[in-house]
Length: 275
Image (cartoon, rainbow, N blue to C red; front, side, top):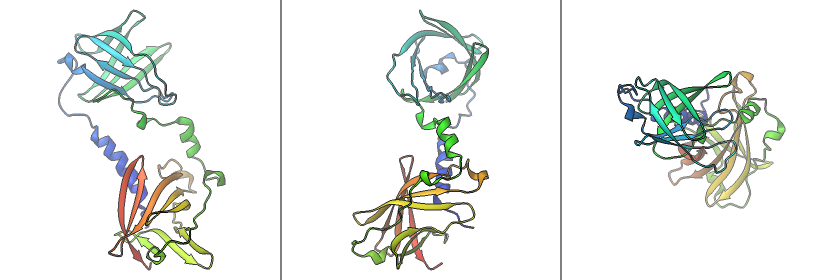
């Protein structure tokens, strides 16, 4: 079965991020060590985009840095006093403007879960301990945008234009089917009566389109778009992805396929195949 490299890279990126922030197994609680709260705690973004950062100081002060991933703007820092309950079950926060209690639902050295009543609802907040004051906007999912992504492909989503610009020396080095080490074809540079263009044969799950094809030095740069026609896969992170890529032949006859996911670079060595 065909296994495209990009979905695997997306999964690895997600799992790697989670593993890098896994909670410690050390037995630490606010009941036994109230100073464990000291540090910078970034809140996992809410659906509204709110992603505040709380900076607990050793002197009993807490600085609330307001952030909103959906509506970025500079807001004033709120300074309050805080006190951890003797049994570590809550945190009392008080300023001249207001006072409230945060219930501690769970605590570990690098993550904690707090809650507080608001009107008739109970809000829950998940925090991650970080090294600097900055919101976790890379974890924010735009609810409206995500809902739009989980829909069938429309022609307006991506305009295919796979033609390779003419006039580049050594074009022969690019022509052919390029496969991974496992033998799965990742991309094809086709030359026929209509010209030279990028192509990827559809498989049972995914369809592929290309545009923005251009030469960048000796590398062929382009955007690769993937989507599925199966409703069961509309939630998959690979559905409706638009990925910048480059294909560059090497002296040894192989080619380097480079692509960017969330600003992170991935390189794969491909070989020309007849399959």
